[in-house]
Image (cartoon, rainbow, N blue to C red; front, side, top):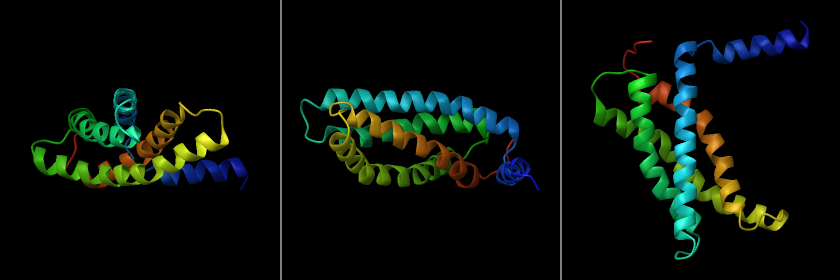
Length: 156
């Protein structure tokens, strides 16, 4: 089998369990969540930097708590379209995102240190590191929400 057909077959196997309309809505809501989430992280970082050591870590935690709720409502109302179960689904949503918060708290200082010591982006390092971690959370978040947070029957 030619390499391009093998790649297409592999992609098909990886994505066949994702309804196309649902994933399209996820991308749209995800763009909003990503922009809003990164903007709140950047804003908290900018506000806290003059006052708090390692402000980008505190900013990450504060932004995450706010952004989980905003993302949850977008997922519930526009993507997975589940009915009721707000508290249970929100708690599951928090669990899915909790790994990202913990990993972010652990990796953010490593990424910031690496950027500051290997590039000339000293002041921008927390913002660049935050953007990289945001991208990672987008991919893993969809799978966690689809398979855990919003498990009840869905309307497509």
